[in-house]
Image (cartoon, rainbow, N blue to C red; front, side):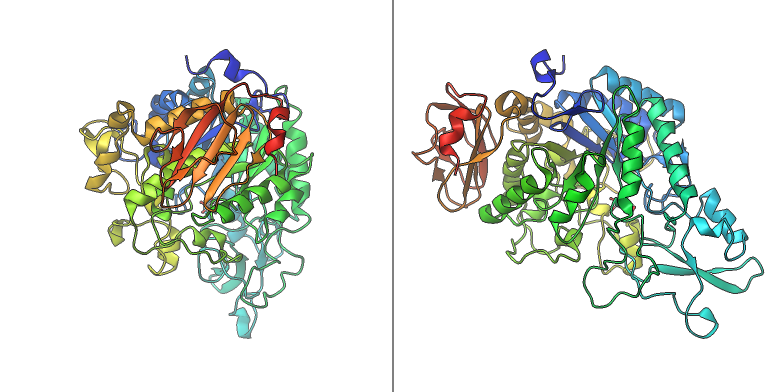
Length: 571
Ligand code: GLC
């Protein structure tokens, strides 16, 4: 019902992993607390997710990536884990989790969880034990505890800053009540970093992975995969740029070799995709060695302005680094939504390599109509590329970022730690609108408590039920694109076509993808493959002309799927 058999054939040129999860699959990212609320407490949960899985399958997706749903005090909404083998009661039970897994598998969807191994929560049993134990103890050695500098150790052990603002160190009170050592936290103070130079930590995580793999989980997205290990001696950071001592240490690769070896012992090998934010995309390559992660997100495209040259360069770069199968994303739970980003002024300055994420979290005047047009066109580009595409929930509805949240409702530690100077990420995490006429826009069952983040009134205009019935909706576009992509592009390599400024064109498999990034209509160049018909389009249906800010996909007549027939168009 969901996909035809031909769409499920194993890919020839791209190895299959995680059972039949291909490296060119479409993965739907579920931010659980905002996806769907099953029990009426205003917070999304596993029962709600189970009910919504059919909609994800109907989009034509191959897998879901579930943001952390483990037991957590929710200071960073699940990225602060208190117990890696338990489900947070706000989200349900282990039995609810198993029910999600079963239903997903029935629908042909693989399930990826999120592994947060750089840090846990201050509520984790190990950290509580560390607080009760003396300096130098086995309990403290699982974390990064150090004596402070200066008189009485009152200054942090080094000058590192937290990604979320402020110092990366917090001082503890020793069991006798005296001010004591400091612990390292690359993120919020509620997220103490593990000491990955301690073999006990490595052993524990292999055990955790086994726990979930044995339940049937198909793989993991690896949180801050370049974090985990810190430079020996924890040297001070000099300058204002990227702190090399905190990230991307050579020893970090041993972790993924161990995880991959474990995953490969299962009859249908388990899959890993890493979140690796580094100043240079080239550094991704080392995480993608054959015995490490299968894929790592390419964020180079996500941070580009709406500009043909810049996007093409980012795509070429990713293909160079990741080979045939990058993992693309244009949005996630950490950045402003695409419809908003593309509706803002497009700075051609390169994103500051020290903080690529903040390049995707700008404020300023926004033209939402333009932004949505471009976001729809960008979806057409994303889904035509070789490799896998990760879709963040709500992108298929064309949701913009919610800027009009009351200050008191904001919960992101970035907002709290920056004293409101940075809005943070709450605006892309507002609960989804399912049905404009129901409680919490159908996110919750009728009569439920208010949604955990307030949904602005205008969000009703994006409700899924209305979009389902509308052939011109963004949801319909996504469905068309996701379902057509396999048959049209297959596993063929991308071959660029030479064209005028602002127009991107490439052939792949049986398809031609044309993206017009300019604000004027552009004819498809006469020299490009002829005899084509439109398969999907973000705006307009004229096969000869691309409207401003639009993408069209064409089926090439008599094309040679091996790619040989397209070679003459290769630059
Ligand atoms: C990653 C997650 C982000 C989280 C951070 C700390 O960047 O994507 O949401 O806050 O790691 O775990």
